[in-house]
Length: 200
Image 1: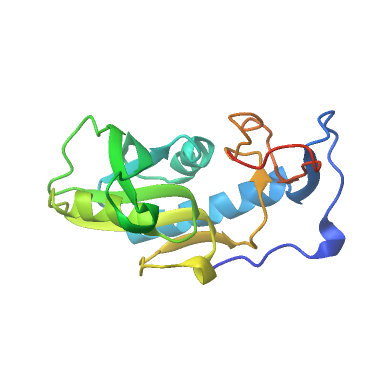
Image 2: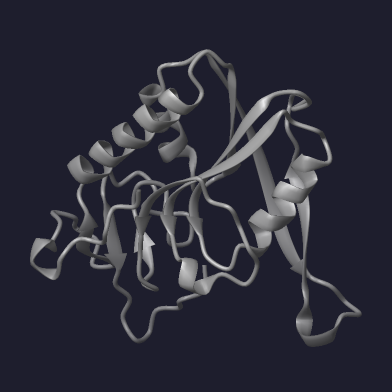
């Protein structure tokens, strides 16, 4: 089950001195409630089994930490870091992906749950999933806090989804603007002036 986006009437201005942090999209209580629901669902689905959570650094670290505490099962955690770059001799500036940090443990014969903060086109996650599947886990599922299925360019089987969200830029709860604002305990709109760059 996916929670709907909050109504416009629920948006409030956060108490944050930085003008780039706009109105609240999801408050901390709403996020916590949904994470608990996901944790209960995952607990029921993997009852009696061990579970390995894999987080993609860095955006999903807050979600991963809270989700792991909401899962009432023996579990392990590991982390991947990736980078995308433009291939020199490719058409239309095609992107390639490489691992900056690989897993510290094998996944063979383990139940693996990949934990993401946001899924858009799905291209990067598709690459990660294919790489993990080659390592022969017992099972491999995906959990994301935010999802934009209308942006999908490849099919991604998302089993656990927190919220479907619009095409806005967000900060807080792991989402950043130029590495800032990840530690805000809620999710807010990024609000940039006309003279501020939008590149992350």
